[in-house]
Image 1 (tube, rainbow, N blue to C red):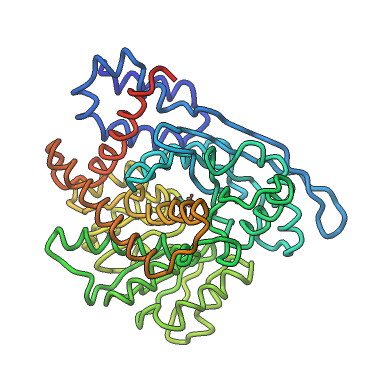
Image 2 (cartoon, rainbow, N blue to C red):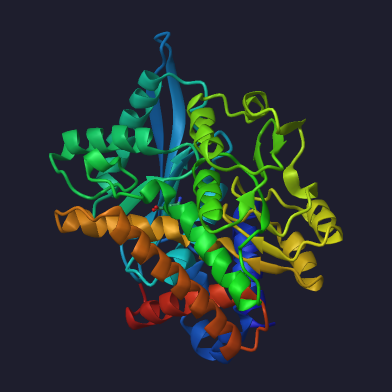
Length: 447
Ligand code: 2IT
C-alpha cells in the first residue's frame, strides 16, 4: 500500500465521526501524491503525514453567558492549534450552530496550506463555537464574546496564536473580544486581527478576501486566454466575502448576477452593482440571515425561495457561502449549462465527488486555499502593522494583496508544471502549500 493510502486509512479510522475533516484530508493527500511518492521512504520513516494530519493541540471549553432574559446559556468553544511549523497559529473563529470539532479541524487543516501559500510566516489554526449570533442582541453578543475570550485569552498571543473572524464573526465580535482580552492582559497587542480601524485594524481588511478572490480569478482566466471584462458571474452568499467579490468584479468590468442565503437565491440580471452591493451590508446587519428583501428593494431582481443559484448560466461561478454548497447534482447542472470556470471563495464549497466530475469535464477549478487566501494574508499584514506600531494605508494594503494573489497563482502553476499536473490548480496549490510546511517540519526535528 502506498504511504498516502496508509495514512488516509489511519486518519479515517481515528476520525470516523468527522466527515468534513476526512474530506479535506483525502482531497489534500490524494493530490500531493507525486511529491509524497518522490520522498516516500523518508516521509514514512519520519511519520510526516501522520504528524501533519494530527493537530499540535486542541482546546475545548465551556462558554457560559447570560441572555437578555437573565437566563444562563452554555455553548462550547474550540480552538485547534493545528500546525506552527512556519509561524504562529493563524486562522479565524466561526460562530455557527453547525460548529463541532470536525468543522474546526477541517478549517484548521485547510488553513495550514492556505497560510503557507501566502508566503508569509503564519501557521494554521481555527476556532469557534456552536453559538448562533443571528437574532441575538448586541449586548448578548458582547456577553458571549467576553465569556469566550475569558477562557481563550490564556492560549493566544501575537507570537503564539492569532485568531480573526470567519462566518458569524465580524468587526463587532472581534471588537468585543479584543476589548476583553486587553482588559484581562493589560496588553494592546496584535492578538486578534479583523479589528476595526480605530482599534488597530487594517484598512481594507473587510474587502481583502473578496478582492483577493477576484484577483485570483483574473489570473486564472488570463492563464487560459480569457479576461474578466464583460463576464457574468454567479456568486452565492451575501456576507463579507460575497460583498467584496461583487465590488471587485464590478471594478474589473465583470458583474455578479446572483446572491444567496439560507432562504433561497436572488437573480439580478442587471447585476449586483453600485449601491446594490452596499445594500448587502444592510441585509447582513439586519441579523435575520435572509436575502429575500433584496428583491423587494430592487424590483428588477427575482427571488427563488429554497433554491441555490447553481442552475443559472454564467461565465464564472464563485461560491462565497459555506462548505459543500456544490455537490454532484449541482456540478452536473453546471457542466450541462456549459460551466468552464469555478473559483472557490468559501472554504471547501465543493464536495470531492463534484470536484472529480468537474475535472472529468474539463472545468477549471481555482481552489479555496489559493483563491481566498487574501483574507488571511491581510490579517498577517495587520499583525505587522500592530507589531510596528504603525498604520498602513488602504492603497498600500491593496497593492500588497494583489501581489500576493498573483504570486499564489504563479506558485500553483509552477507546481503543476514541475509535477506534470496539467491544469489541476487544486493539486498545484496543495503541493506548493504543503512543500513549504513539510520542509520546515523536517528541519525542526521530531516535534
Ligand atoms: O478562512 C479564512 O482564511 C479566514 N477566515 C480568515 C482567517 C484570518 O486569520 O484572517
